[in-house]
Figure 1 (tube, rainbow, N blue to C red):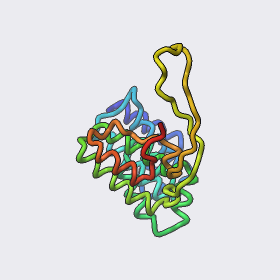
Figure 2: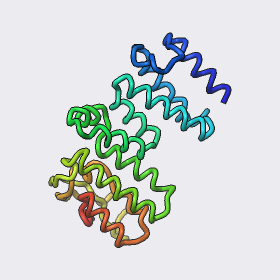
Figure 3: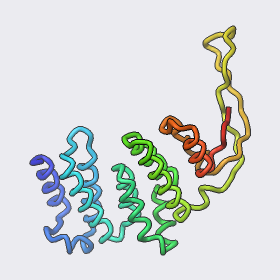
Figure 4: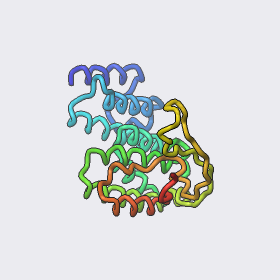
Amino acid sequence: ARETQRTITRRRRQLDLPTNNRLYSENPGAAAFAETLFLIATNSETEPPSSIKKQLISLATVILIECGSTSVAVKCLLTADQISEAIALCSKRSKSNKDSAEAKSMGSQAKDFFRVAAKTAKGQNESDRCKSFYHLHCFLKQYDPNCFSLDKRKVRVSRMEDKNKSAFRKDISTVVVEQSVLAHEIRFPDELFSSPQYCRKFRSMFGYAESVK
């Protein structure tokens, strides 16, 4: 914790930032400082205690919002696996189409939210996973409805190999699959759902083809 505080203080001095948070929006180095706070909070080698990590992320988010860098805040929140906070922030700004377009241009694509949701779901029970993916689906329908548009693309798939074939020979074929744009960009985490019924339901909700094999 002391090392974390020293790092924050050193970075604050480097950017010549004031100690009063209300003045951050007037300082050109504030956004850089906020991103540094995110890096400190998510550093796997020197990751601070959960309570301090939460405070750092919260402060960094507030600073970025005050600086008018909401899109950067969303991107940083996703990098920190804070998907609920990222969704909440985007939802508050959803009334402005400009904000949504800006957030997506900064790297906060539908696939980025989906990737973090899948990562977070690994630590949840199946009931909470279903709630999380349902919530994500409702959000993406507003945030980026185009990600559910169907598109036909060529997909390379591995087929079951004949036992008599060489073990070094890869049996790969290319097929044309129609599924959502999102489904073409990121695989669905079937392994997270022990219930085939739930798995099929969510694959269908997000526009994934039933099977590409």
